[in-house]
Image (tube, rainbow, N blue to C red):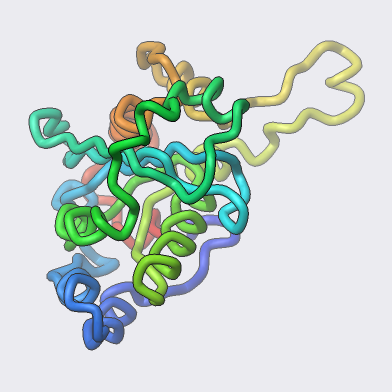
Length: 237
């Protein structure tokens, strides 16, 4: 398989090792963990499905309000090890964000700040390949939150199930004639992508439910289009 369109050529094990001298102890342990290399078969990888709910889409102006994690492999989802955390953002919640993810002011009143849960988050992510649906959200918000909390960046390899769907459906936007004839674009949103694989409909916009949905989607994508022998380096970014 070709590399993802727009995927940067990153030697992730080398990058992680280069960050292991971080003065922040939790970050140093995170970067110094045992990370798989690009040649590792997908069937041997320990994944961590990751989803964030936020107050908006701009990481410079908005903030994380919840995090969901579920560890899994291609063969098993470890729901008993799922982790869900509400996070108290700086400032007030926007009415539109409350309507979107249903996290209210009373939910966040006693919740910890991101800096208070960063060490636990890093411990759970260490050595596992994160799986997300639309990496720009998770990457940008975690980067901004880490910078605010400890003054350092946070970057790690991910597999983006939305990018996989984009690569599998390069002609998803029909031309003008097909649109005129009623042809609809192919959606690569999480719920719509799952429907193509016969996966059940879940209520969206809860970080833990969306993490589970993303884990199941990657399992279905690999089973349908790839194999457990697929190189990790073909899919991570």
